[in-house]
Amino acid sequence: MRDNQERDSEFVDRLVHINRVAKVVKGGRRFGFAALVVVGDQKGRVGFGHGKAREVPEAIRKATEQAKRQMIRVPLREARTLHHDVNGRHGAGKVLLRAAPAGTGIIAGGPMRAVFETLGISDIVAKSQGSANPYNMVRATFDALKNLESPRSVAARRGLKVSDIQGRRRETDVGETASA
Image (cartoon, helix red, strand yellow):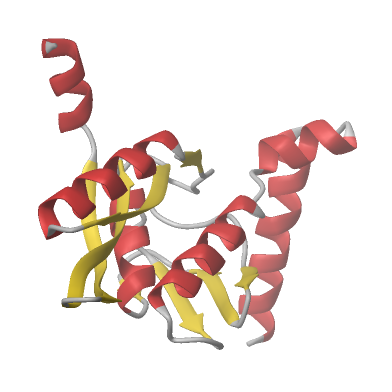
């Protein structure tokens, strides 16, 4: 029991959206609630969940449990930003995530901001280009995060050393600043 509580305390959860839904029955309307929650450990793991119930706290609890079951690991550069720019989409929701230099902060809209805060990213520029629906934005953000690759995984796939790949990136960064 205590181990379970300690494991739960390492996660940070953010309520992204609550939707009141009505079911019309013979006597009138029955109201229920749908909650969208994002959970992360602020060290590179994040997940989202969707829960429905007649009461708000119960919907939030269900969503939080689902989010903890569906966590993904995201490779971060210097534990503060992404390794490269990436696009994601889900339905009509489209997002663009860009790596940012130190001190930039989180420049992102509501649902995406919650994902980045719980993930532990401190510098990122993000733009939602499609649907403003929080569900589609969160799913598109997760699609983009799943497409991220670390230099280590790219090096392993290509049969190179990590220093070869990162060395090339450093050279291009230096070349861009010299020509600017």
